[in-house]
Length: 105
Length: 227
Image 1 (cartoon, rainbow over the protein chains, first blue to last red):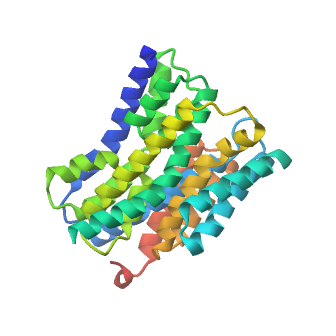
Image 2: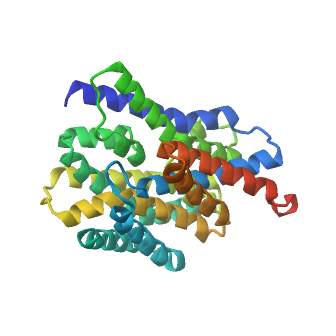
């Protein structure tokens, strides 16, 4: 393994692990105001939704049209998973649709 | 009760883990394409264990301290989700050190499934679920890193869609628990507006969009409906 890969991997791992462990370590068992607790419950889902959207947006040199296949794949996954809860089927169907459409669009 | 929680965690973690395994497989294939070696890919998957951060690191220029700092700050930005999920899990804390240590396995899928668990103690459920997700994620990553896949436009199309489809499923897990969809939909819309209309960096647009959506939702929701 290349040394720089190992070093970067360890640094990224530290960033990820601190982000996972530190808030719990600092805030565990603390009583919080109701609104703040509600905000903490609501924010992660919003952040996941926002970052999902980021991945679906066109990158440099891409157009909105080039991301149609990605959006369609995600919508197919949602359409399967919301009523049935079948994650794997939804993932495979979503990827298959996205892959197929990427050839056409 | 504890054994029931563990059983439920293994069952749900396996179901979620299978999609995380596909994500790991796709990550490995994409990483091979950008020039990482199989052992390096497995190393990243084992110790970083964050697909979003690992995808962010693709193509990063690591030849200067400034470039590394840019990568680290980008990773920290992506990890704001982890901070929020960890804060939310702190609601269940009873003060045992193992609860804090167990948070190293915190991923979107584990949090989203534990979020609505009501059938028994949360921690045994959470730990067994995230353990299964990790095991299957690593299996998918190793398979992807070691088994050659032919270069094909269909595979490229699937690579491109993998993170989006996976995150869509995490949102679905929340929606299936009866959690209000409106702040999530608002966050998506505001991210699009921030990134495409206002020209903000996409990750910043997501963070601002999520913050505004959650704040507005919390303050317009009547207190008696909370809990």
